[in-house]
Image 1 (cartoon, rainbow over the protein chains, first blue to last red):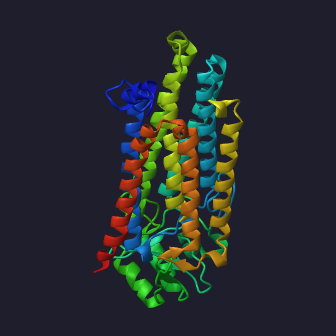
Image 2 (image 1 turned 135 degrees about the vertical axis):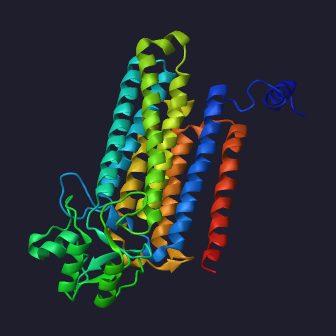
Image 3 (image 1 turned 180 degrees about the vertical axis):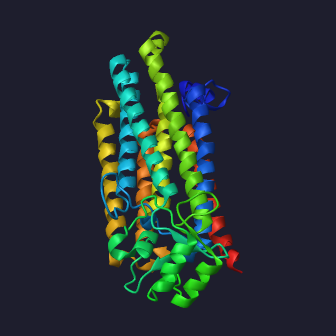
Length: 306
Length: 102
């Protein structure tokens, strides 16, 4: 038989006691919000997976899309996004350190670690803006057929060519268009002039077309450079839509996290929590911040790795 | 809580997350041939990526978000809905998704 003390404990847990979960109201509600947010993000990511599965042959391979690194030339797949991941993990660590210092009522340490967390968040949002800029500006350019399929230009050696290389020639042109825009007429006349050029689908098992078919595709279609919600040079339209939507929604979480972190940081400076006698607000905003990191771990895997 | 002496436990998780991310990036860049064998609809490499991601997510939720130290009722309230609904949604889309081609 259990003792009387155990019975009272049990009553406190399930019989209408004040804290059945052992957590205070604010923390519990933050957790339930995060739970619903996790379901939202999993909905987005599984929808992304479904569309990618459906359009396998024309779905771009991430390492051919995100290849830039500030200050470095040429192909640097994954490097930039790895740096972004590192920054976000680092700022998650400084957040735990802030929460930990809060439990010990160490105001100076909370101030310090909150500040580093905000700095990390800012760098991450800035990095994402940089990545969006390059994504929107585009790189090599592509042909969009009349049926709205994206095809990339290749030469006889199987190298992918940019519009700059096609129009200005291999010596004069750059592997990236560097913001130069090309008209359909320019690209079409250059393609007609070099019988070794052909078009190929961007996906993993993408089909290649003959030179004659390729010229016909371009004649009936158009050229695309960069990306927006309607056209993008990387592949399927849905790829850019999902990229903007998922990284945008995550970026919005990071941005609002930075704002909330700043409000809490300001209150720490004012000594609000010192007077209140506890730093539970830091713990709550910490949960939100870790969640942002958690989502990024999945976005990183499903958008950039798999 | 005994585990909360000092900050070494935070840095331990930091190094685990960093090493796993490093391994993922290196595998993603070199894509070793022997890991590209196809099993259950995808490559071993992709399955490895997903498993490593789940390990990272586990450390973030358990240690950084403190769930490891919560009460059992709290753990169930958080884990049951997410661990039932998310795999369910994934399963439905994976099985029903094949009808997109018919």
